[in-house]
Amino acid sequence: MAAREKCREDFRDAEREDDNTLRIMVDGLVGSLQDKLSQPIEKVDPGISYQIGLVTSYVRTHFIVTDLILNGDLVEAVTLIRKQLESVARLNELDKRPLDKLEGKTPNIRMFFRHGGGEMYGHLSEVAHFSKSRVSELMHVIQNGDRIGPSLYPVFTEHSFACLDMHHFVSIYFLAWITEKLSEWYPHIDHQEGRTMVGLTIAYAKKIDVIRFPDRQPEP
Image 1 (cartoon, rainbow, N blue to C red):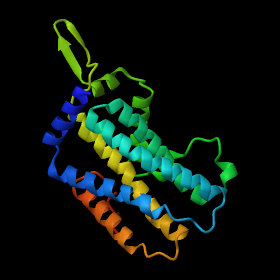
Image 2 (image 1 turned 60 degrees about the vertical axis):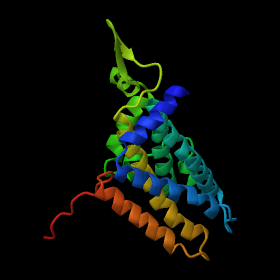
Image 3 (image 1 turned 90 degrees about the vertical axis):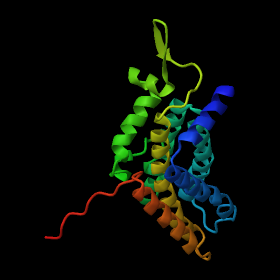
Image 4 (image 1 turned 30 degrees about the vertical axis):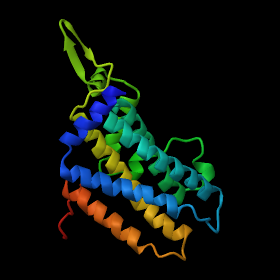
């Protein structure tokens, strides 16, 4: 517990103002969904019911991931970020394909994350499966005499910020999806403020290079 608290202190001391601002924006938007989703949805079918379960799980996991990153538990955080990425892909699939075609199948990540998500998923899976020895670097390598190995206790490293960027990358995809979906689930409510806030968050994330859009090809 003491090591994790020290990690949180060191993280905050090293965190850039831009990163802190984006973290507040993203966490605030995800947290605001609690009130919005507390109202009943008029028409619920099995597909929507599945999406509601995914959204609820996503929101709960979001704050667990943030805490894990702050605490220095990066392998655990990355493993859950992979789960979040898969959830967002499945949410999008449910908009386009019948439920019976999807159940029991792994979400198609590359179809819905063409701009960096597919490559990132490979890195996330490497960590989740601990398939390469270099994953140990996320636990901070220490040297004690002739002995070199990962620290048993969490220690703050700069890898925390890379994990946070991935966390925000996936969360922004989720926020863009849920903001539009709320308009379908609650058509009698004005959602313009939410759209505006998500748009500002996307613009800010692009400004500080957390997300990047592909350059447009010149018109022929």
